[in-house]
Length: 390
Image (cartoon, rainbow, N blue to C red; front, side, top):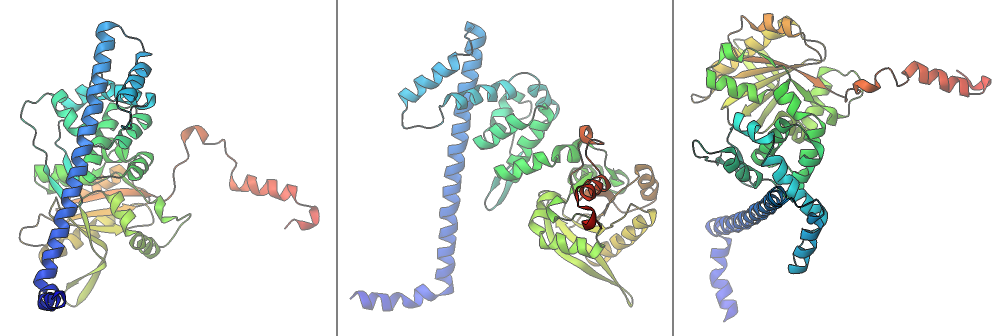
């Protein structure tokens, strides 16, 4: 009987409709598990927020000393022996979480920069979280804080002191779904400084509508950290391009969320002639093609003219009817901001100029204190027996 049932169901089990049905069910199960995990994380972080707030408020009102944190930790562990997370160190982090985000300089910073945040999922990004008009920062902050896993919070609290930088990494983690290792690498690479505080070179306000210009400015960094390529010295532009393609996932992470790779040496034609763009991407949120021109040397004014020409071709031949104007980014080793300003002033297409870093810069306090390559060579030569010296 069972064999007959299996034989009867065999056509159904092998049909494309059934296989697609199973795939849809699997996707739904995975989505539900992720949603449950996210809900548990939110509730856990909000619990930590409430515990931290209660400790801070009681210390302020009743004058409790610092030793009360260890007492609270011991009592909570006795009351909930099956629960983890109530170690003295963790309870100190709970107190610090509210002290840093719920009081002091962080609240004015959040009020001055009330940008919405995006929640991440395994299947894409949800719409921007809705925040009621006029909501106070103290009401908004728990929503944002609850989106970040606990380990990420501890990392941000330990590695950063500037309220504006903390807010940037909180929003970026919530929006892009960074893992803890990615967050650590972004902090070490100075993503906040390069994305927000450093001067950017572009003509976006002249070439784009105001709202789109602001989004394009947010997309562009003043410099890009390409240390992950492992390049130690000067290379040709094609080798740089090859390395970027071989480490495309790392490069996309450095570019920022929203970039989708289209192609390398992307072919464009005009009449009988062919032209090739180094790298072409599509930005999902800008809804625009983004072309990269890689230059090993410093910026030259003629680079802007070449990019302007490429963008004209892209807009005429590749841009979809619903797309925004194509954007060009010239990535070079060095740039002079005044020279860039003059070169872009007459260009009708939106063009940005950024520099890249192949190696970490030596900290200012170490400059001049480490031996040069020649000095090291002299020391080695002096240490060799005379007959062995070159």
